[in-house]
Length: 482
Ligand code: G6P
Figure 1 (tube, protein in one colour):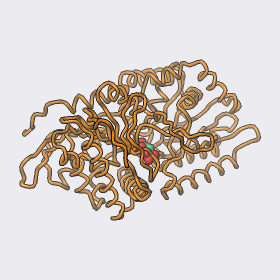
Figure 2 (figure 1 turned 180 degrees about the vertical axis):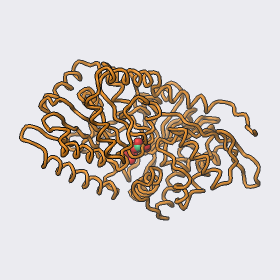
Figure 3 (figure 1 turned 120 degrees about the vertical axis):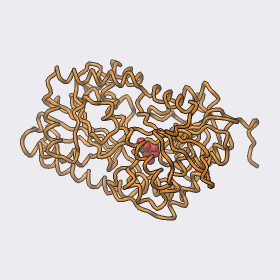
């Protein structure tokens, strides 16, 4: 018979996300044992102190299908696993989350697929997450729901537990209503989100897009940043606010790593191993069609073909970490990228030099920082990106105020990193000339730009982000009827 927990613990502060902030440590045979390691990334760093200080818990999926894991604690954080069956993984995660919502919210770069079975699963799994929170939340607790996989959770929670204070943060873009309109379940999604007291977005335009959709598809009345949510009889039941809170990174972690002698030495070794070219360019992305990796490779290939870049002088390191490998569009993209890289290298490589050093791996943060230190030019060419934290990490690692960041205006980070060399990745000629400009930037200008960008990020790290959001969530709201 199932073992009962000695006390039915209730938590005052709960975070809910599709994934728990831990990864399983597997042994040498690749089999999981019972060890866990905290996941890399700023979100968990920002929230871990709140988790351990206050009576907090994190609800999420532990990453393996068809496996029940009991609540456990890790480095002082209470973790409550949600179980997903292999059907849930296929229909809710790979299907509706990553083949419907993900492409729809990223400017339909890939065609979103609409399947009713996926939607049914999305509803069912969102209910599973909401139930887990409702069961464990103390009276009047604060709950912070994360990201596009869980857009129905705010409404489900409000219904089950009207005492809770509910925040939601969307880490990815929110599309304009003209695109959102395609979704057969657009009303349900907006209604699901409007269960929250506060909705956070990366850019003001994302918050604006959401409010326009709330007005258009649910007839909600929108006043400044407030959406007046109506009940069945048309009376206002509560006010949901929508605002931008641009996310950031764990600045201290990146700075400390960038100052570590072994990591500085590793950066020099990377340059040496590549034959000490004059210029190292770097791209670091999940292998995702939103990242504009093809556009970047196209521009780089043309620069080689035009003779503006010589393979003896410049190497592009492209880290493409494996992602969502069972989703068709991701498989197609991998084929295409790897074909293109093979073509470029086959054409331009010499025995000594390589044009593109392509790495389909993920690396620990220490190695990433060594690459940031080794790279003269960072290329962030996303076609659409909620924020892009790689851009912020690169800038933070450049403690000597040198190096150049080429940054897509379609990444949220462009709102904060105004001194980057901004590009439209669709404009290949513009991208090519900006890459050349970055390679040839005078040390003085590089320094001026990098200094201003570093100041922006050092003043706005991820703790600042979570503190601002949570403070706004606790604010008393005065209804705006202007
Ligand atoms: C993006 C999303 C996250 C997601 C991450 C990795 O950053 O905003 O919610 O966790 O990608 O994707 P995965 O599908 O592996 O969780």
